[in-house]
Image (cartoon, rainbow, N blue to C red; front, side, top):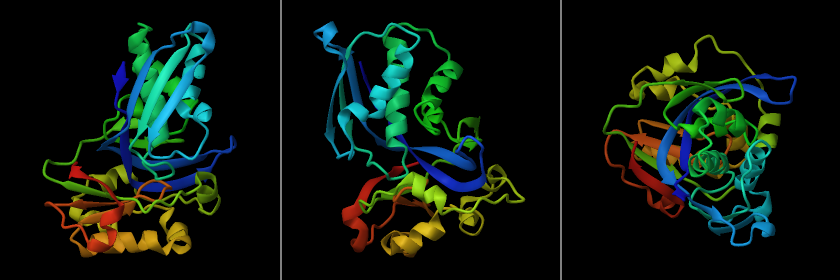
Length: 272
């Protein structure tokens, strides 16, 4: 079977508190975007051979056997008799980019195996398995625009944006370490929820919605700050870094004119 794990952007990201379990409580809007990987899973020719995975496309920077797809399979196999599998993953979503590529791959693996082997798991059950592979993985079980709290696993759907908004995703190829990004971020508790700010017109978001990781990461990597500046100069009505990664996106009311300086780094453009 074949599936196409989606990418997401974060519309705002607030780090609210450090938790006793070592994670952080956050608040963000997860929003799916038109960029995806391709994932094919079939049973292995030799059941005794174990799982095998081939990764093509963009370099993930890790060993194939450590891929979150394999993690998801092992997690599900703890409770269900999943046979040895042969996996082909084609990466179009860059790693360390704040787009949830690995988390999406793992969640889509769970959903695919649920269908392929008739496990009849409800979405809520799949989200529990997904959370074992990553804090934002539960979102990708049913990737609709959502206000996320807790570690990112407490999800409440929000209205999608009105038709007609265009998206530009720009990634300069820098990999941001998530653990280090959180270590340099000071938790805070704003007075107004991000969900309330999201309900305001997009044209007003520039002065309302922020990503708490930007200050430190922009200081470390001025090129990322420069991309955001260029997107605003090119007519974006809202621009932000996505998650704790190096991707910056712009939302436009019409089809964007891509600045020459960032054209080589554009990884996706299309309608939201």
